[in-house]
Image (cartoon, rainbow, N blue to C red; front, side):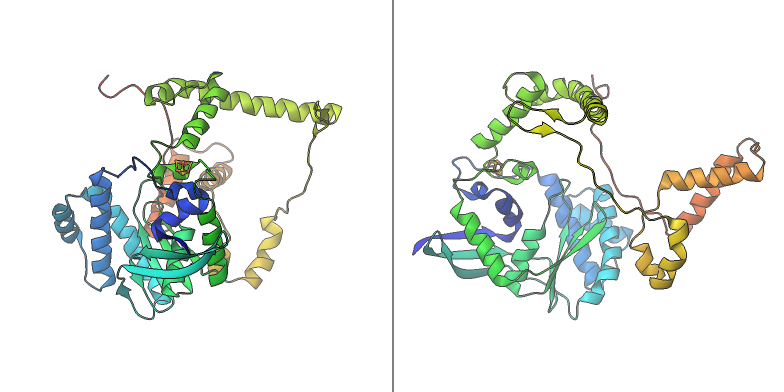
Length: 368
Ligand code: SF4
């Protein structure tokens, strides 16, 4: 029998991407930023009141946020999205209850040796067949394996993860139990042998001492600046404008390569391979011709699930309509007014939802 291994379900998404993230680190990083934690606790507390049938209003949000030293402006939108999502999701729960901390032990064959593997965790909510977890974090990470861990340990058929910031949710069907065990055993054999740096390093306790991560970052820096160097905050900021220019340069270069291949055929590489244009076709549906057939086959609800409505395209369409009504010479302000009226009607109908977005940009320092 080999040494026992224990892992929290919340660490599974990182572990399944990089097995060595679960090795014993000399200087493990412990999260110290309490503000996001306080906001997360407050949002969870409010949602458990709502799920328990206790009405929550703005005063209730203030009381809970004050008690948790949380930021009400941050917490309120998380709570309201979660409450709306719950109204849709509660149909999947035959009963609802807060979950207790669990610890499930299994005996797995890891590298030929029998090993005791313990899975621990605490989902937010559970029904007979389903588990639900609210996510409040600012950094998005795929949670499929966390939910698979809950499904396995709690013998549930489905896991639901609600992304309160992104305003969306995902339903994950439980994988077969032996496939889950095999995947877990395989990763355990790779601890200390396989490192796979990526965005999940953000959640790794070894991120400050991991050589693979440092090398990965240095390689990226070497590609950009021509020399391997440490990725300090100052240096990262300094090269940011160059990277933006590089993105444009790469797009231009790729367009040139494409054009050259179209004109002159594949381009040979010294190692016997060649750069060529791989051609394939993609089905594109013409909405005008497809509409009668689709509406006959699918309900409005089913069809809505297949559609994305472009905000710019809708605004352009309404402006074009007004222009046509006035033979191309609409009165001053008519286009803007038409868009405004339509947007107010859409907002009133609850058809517009805002999803928070972020983009890295450069600006003058606030206190500079
Ligand atoms: S820092 Fe990244 S690469 Fe290194 S062990 Fe952790 S997850 Fe893996």
